[in-house]
Each structure stands twice: as C-alpha cells, then as structure tokens.
Image 1 (cartoon, rainbow, N blue to C red):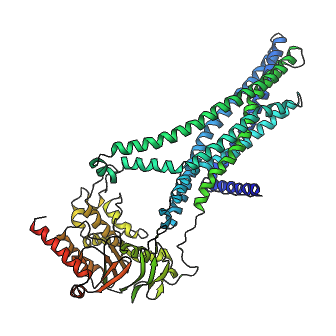
Image 2 (cartoon, helix red, strand yellow):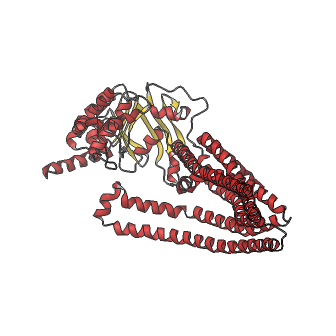
Length: 609
C-alpha cells in the first residue's frame, strides 16, 4: 500500500513537472517533440540504408561494374549522406532548442521559488528545516522538470528506435531481441541503485552544503569584511570551509568511483553478449546463409541497440530518481503560510481614528521557552507619537512585528480602532504602515529608486522623492553624490557610491516617509545619527506624523522625551507610562535611566567625546 501511494505521488510530480515545462516554453517544447520523433526514426533509416548500400556495392562488383549497378549504389550512398545531414541538422537545432527551453524553464522555476519565498511567513526563516528544504529546492531540484521531460522524451525516442531494431533482428532469429535486452539489464540495475544512493547522500548533506555557503559568505561578503580583518579570521573561516568541502568532495568522489566501477563491469557484460551475437552472424555470412550487408546491419544494430536499450531502461530509472529530487521542489512550493487573512476580510482603514491597542498579549518566538511579551497591554493614541523605551531584549521590536502581523500572538489580540488585525488582509494591513526597522536594508539601487521603493506598487513620483528625502534629512548628502539622485549606491557594482551608517539610515527613513501611510513605525531611527542631528530630525518627524499614528522605539531618552506619551517596557511588560516630566517626577526606572544617560552625556561633553 505504501509503495502504491509513493507511485501515485511520483505520477503527480511528473504531471506537475510537465505542466511547468509546457507553461514555461510551449513553443520550444512542441518543436522539441517533433524533433524527438525524427531522431527516433533516423537511426533505423540509416541502419537499413547501410544494408542496401553494402549489398548494392557487392552486386555492382559481382556484375563487373556496370553503370546501372554502380548508379544504384551511388544513389543509395547519396540518400545515406542526406540522412546523415538531416540527423546532424536536427541534432544541432535540438541543442539550441534545448538551451532556449532550459533557460525559460529555469527562469520560470526561479520565479516560482521567489514568489513562494516572499509569500511564506517570516517564522520559516527561524527553522533549520526550512533552510535545508530551500537549499534542496533551489539546488539540483530546480532543473529536474526539464530533466524529467528529457528522460521521458528520450524514452519515447529510444523506444521508437529499439522497436524498429527489434523488428529487424526478429527477422533473423526470434531470440536476438532478448539478447540485446539482456546485455543492457546490468547497466539499468547499476544506474538505478547508484542514483538512489547518490540522492540519499545529497539530501543528507544539505546541512553541510549550507555551512559551506555560510563560511564562503564570511570570506567574501562586504558585511563581514571589517571584522574578518580586525580579528584575523581569514584563516579560521578558510579552514572551516575547506574542512566541510573536503568532506563533501570525498563523499561525492566515493559515489562517483562506485558508479564508474559498476558501470565498467556492466559494460563488459554487454560487450560479451554483443560479441557472441555478432560472431553468430559472421558464421552465417561465412557459410552463405546471410549477406555482407546483413553483417553490417547486424553489427550496427547490436553496437547501437544495446546502448539504446540501456538508455531506454536507464531513462526509466532516471525518471524515478528525478522524482525524488522533484519531491523537494514541490514540498517547498506546497508550503502554506499560516499568517493569512480571512475569506472575507474587514474593510481596510485609511487612517487610525481612535487608537491601536495591544490587549493582554502574550507571545514567544518559535522554539523559545522565554516569552518575548507577557500580559502586554499598550495603547497608541491616534494622531500622536508614542515612544517605547527599554533595555535590549525587553520586547520593543517584537511589538512592531506583531503589529505588522509577521506573527500572531499566542494569547490576546492587537486591535486597530477596535478591530482585531487578524480580520484584515495582511498585505493591505502592511501597506498602511511606514516602517523603519532597526537594521534597514541597504538596497543597491540608484538613490532616487531606493527611496521610491517605499511605495513600489505606484509609479515613481519625483517630487515626492525629493520631499521625502528633504524631510528625512537626506537631500543634502544625496545632492553631493557624483550623479545626485541617479547615483548607484553600494559597492557591489561598478560606479557604486558607499554611504555612511547614518546616511543609509536617513535614506531608509526617506523611504518610509515616501510611503505616506497612516501608521508610522520607527525602530531606533537615530541609532546612527550624531546628537546634533537628533533634535532637528525629531522636528521633521513631528511634521511628518501630523494626523498620523506613530510608534517610536528608541534607547535615546533625549528623543523619547519629545513624544506625546512614553511607555517603559521591561521583560515583555509595560511597567511605566506617562509624559517625560511625569515619569521623571515619579522617580521610577525611567527617571533613574534618564539621570544616568544625562550624566554620561555630560561626561562625553566634558571629555570632548
């Protein structure tokens, strides 16, 4: 029963794979199918013409070289040459068609993987099983639909040729087709077993391959370049990379060595059976039971027939093994997100009219035993800026992730104007938020394009780009770049310009402002800014958040004190709330931290730092 279920699953994989191939390149696939039939017939025509040519040459020689006999031999030679020419043309056109087909299919599958990766929940990125599956889906699996098509097509092509060869052999002796098949059976067994062993190893080694990719990234990625040099880690990561690669390489070569040895033995067996059959036909020619043309045909059929039967049987094994790889691709494509909207989502809001409320929220990250938020109650009044302060790990950024519905609370709810955000379409919900994350992306794009990514679903508005840039304090440094807003940023590509940490942050802030959403979420927006820039920046923020609901996460109390309401979070709970002056007068944790921060700032000024 289990075997039947697996076969049914394989058939479903084949169906889906062939559907991908057809939808990706229907024209190329149709032409490829026609060429397949032609390639199946041409070898048979050539072999049969060989017999006719040899026999006509022998007849011309026996007849004393009469022109009629010689002309007939020449005619058949020309026809044979034409057959070879057609075969060569079809072969080379087939190579081009296959390349075009492969490119189209590879791009289509990449798009499917990319679309699925963006669609799935962020929580997937926190599990090694997901990364292993992604590695397998993006690795050898991505080319398997085309390989499956080629295997099935090869089976059809070789099947046509083998059936025709078998008919010719059957005319000489009924048992000759069985000899051809018998000689190819060991090759099939070897190919099938070793391919399955290789697949099991490839699947089991996905973790090692990911480690190799990680070590490689540490050595070549710009994000790690500074620390690699400061701590002299180059040799350390090189040794780790080479150690993993040595293990992978040794195991792969061991599989290939086994394959080579086994295939030599299978080839030797095929050679012995073919030699015996050809010797039988030579005996018949020697004693006049067959012609010299029969021997030529017989030799070609056996020399090519066993190879074709082996290829035909091997294609069946390849189809089965490709299905093992396809399983990885389709397992990934079949993953379903858990953060989804209801069938009939609530009408999305244009602005927050009353408040955003976290009500009795409890949440733990997957795999963690410690709650990130516990009995968490927080209200963000509409049209005001609320600051959330606390030590690292207190749960500040978690609140942003829950509000954006990257995760759902384990208990409790997040409400916007009294409506649970789980009733909204998550995509539409996120479009209502302008967000600056603590570590924003440094997009390698032109400066103006990078800002416009804040609302990529609309046509770029140049005036809006300039306004957002000015409000974020980015216009001045962008104007100094070699080509202004047309300057390519980052150093990955030629002519790219690098920015400082503060400049990248201001650019990300401009991207958030460009969106013009009713909710503004800023996570440590001044972490890369100097103290002279903070006050000026906050005044810009106040103007940008007018008639909007803002949440400001910061460790800088000099920024937090300008917010309308301040909440102090500790160990996933709100422990203090009020205005800056109220919290300072209360003498609690906020007041103590404020005094300490002011003392340290004073020391920095006194020491000139």
